Length: 263
Ligand code: NAP
Image (tube, rainbow, N blue to C red; front, side, top):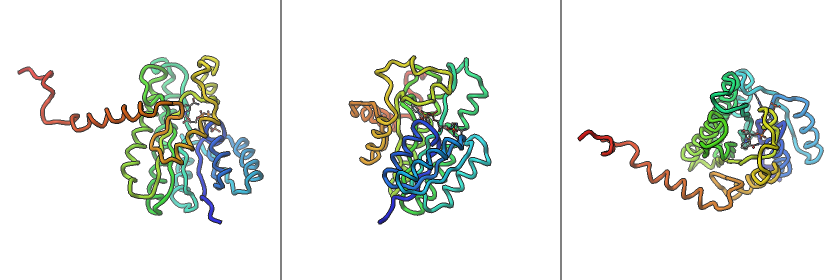
């Protein structure tokens, strides 16, 4: 029987990443679990090995540290068993942009932007050579929202969305599938870790992590490019994206718009 290969999951020790690990294990994937907390990763690995009769490797890594990032990058480049990358590890920071600690923001940029960029390129190159593979990049609905939350966090997620869409264009005929997932508020530890409380979020805006990941995997199975688990009317997304696309031919011209000209 053929197996789907190995899925490398960043941020696998809790929340969305740990939930994907369980779902992908149930689909028969072998796993490489990446995060900093070795004890939690080992505990999850032991359970999943036992329950699903799969291989699970624990790779302890701080993705904001260059040598650790290099190790994960080189696994993606050199391990031909890897068929799926889940670019999921991420963090937010306490407070609005102007109030937030700039050192924390710096770490966030390393984790939410630099690490997924490096890993997506390593996986994209390796999968393209092999003519198959899946890359899932976890963005956020905040990539589309300027009205609330920490602007620097939202911007990291806008970056992930833009990068994903550009990768989809580059890999269109390659056999490699690339998906952006835009979760809304999801019940995980990310809020606690940034000094926030889940209780501050209206219950009707907060999704359980199992439901979020199941929706994202349904979107993957139906080959969606961008999956927004909470959005009931998907036409709203298509209209938004179409309006953006309609502007493209008009955004770079040899003359300024008439409203800006002196005469
Ligand atoms: P979470 O429960 O806090 O999980 C974050 C994961 O990232 C953990 O496994 C954590 O593990 C890992 N991580 C943190 N810093 C790391 C580092 N320096 N190096 C390596 N791994 C690190 O939060 P989550 O909600 O599942 O977040 C997963 C992704 O979903 C993030 O990209 C987040 O931005 C995105 N997202 C979340 C929500 C939401 O409402 N929850 C909404 C939209 C998008 P260790 O501490 O063991 O390293």
